[in-house]
Amino acid sequence: MTDVTYSSPLLSRSGAVAATGADEGVAWHYGDPVAEQRALARGGAVVDQSHLGVVRVSGPDRLGWLHSITSQDVEHLAPRQSTELFVLSPQGHLEHAVGVVDDGEATWLIAERASAPGLAAWLERMKFMMRVEIEDLTGQYVAIGEAVDAEGTEDEPLTWHDTWPRVVGGGTRYGPPEDEHPGADRPWRLVLVPAASLTDEIAAREAAGWRLAGTWATEALRIEAYRPRLGRDVDERTIPHELDWLRTAVHLAKGCYRGQETVARVHNLGRPPRRLVFLHLDGSSHLIPEPGAEVRVRPADAAAASGAPGKVIGTLTSVARHHELGPIGLAVLKRSVPEDAELLVTSTAGGDVLEIAATQETVVPGEGVSADRPESHRDRLTPGLRGGDGLL
Image (tube, rainbow, N blue to C red; front, side):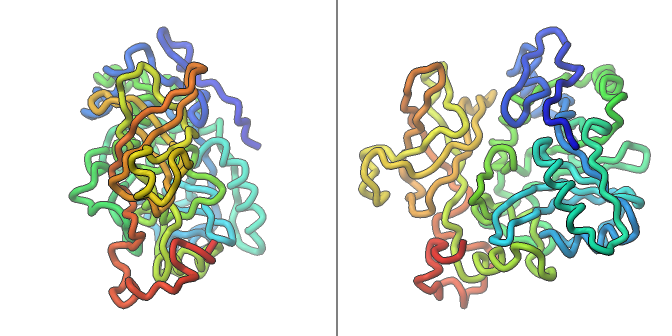
């Protein structure tokens, strides 16, 4: 069983400030968050990601078995080729989001630390007569984050490469094409090493000229890239379409798996009931809102948004102060909210209630139609499927 309470040895560094929430256990920053973020943005930083969960699946049936029970086509996954998959509920709601890489003998799954015990337990229940073995190695193996846009080589430790925002084979997109997507400028990968070697691996990269950065930097660049995250942007109702996450983690043409019916029906016939947006937040205050803050339409735009002033229309899911853009965030809104509506985010940071103005950039369009939906399906939504009604 994974111990979800964790404290990295790097938190003993001078100037280290501990992160909270989903990143608890590692450093938020090491005393100079702006410089750390700039170093990461130019590819000159390393990040302690040892708080993540690591599950290992071995056995000759592992790839075919994972292929049959998850959202991604991994049946013929080559060694050191990275991908991503979901474990969905029977209703298609997102339960686990997992980075995947195989070393030729075992498949390694990288997840949020709090998610790892449930992931390992669910996989154990799904073994039946398959020749597979599941080990939760969280705490024995840890991840190191690097701003490198490459798979790991045979001379490196096993590495998971984040292919976001590329649309993988069998996937689709709701958001911008790859050549217009802000995430195209965000290289990222996770290198898996034994926990005992974490400090030595970090020290070797620092000796090569890289700066040690905290999760303030990784979160700011992730948000800028519209990159969703299980520990931040997902709730019990989330389906992948709402976050434009069919790009990297879902193969629409593979066989049946739990939750597949909802994935296919929303893609082919319906529209996701909510949509992810990127927010520029008013930076005139020294405070920024906390994740979970309520989002409302500004009173002047309330009538156009089909709601009374003050009505909650979404939730701020991620927030950070970017070194160039200032305060930014991701939020999940009702699909019916106009894409040009001005918003207010209600913050209780510091004990005071503040209303922070925000403007939105579209990630998932309000029309809720993917780039590859057949033309014959675009205008044939039945009333029971509009807005996601009757699907979830």
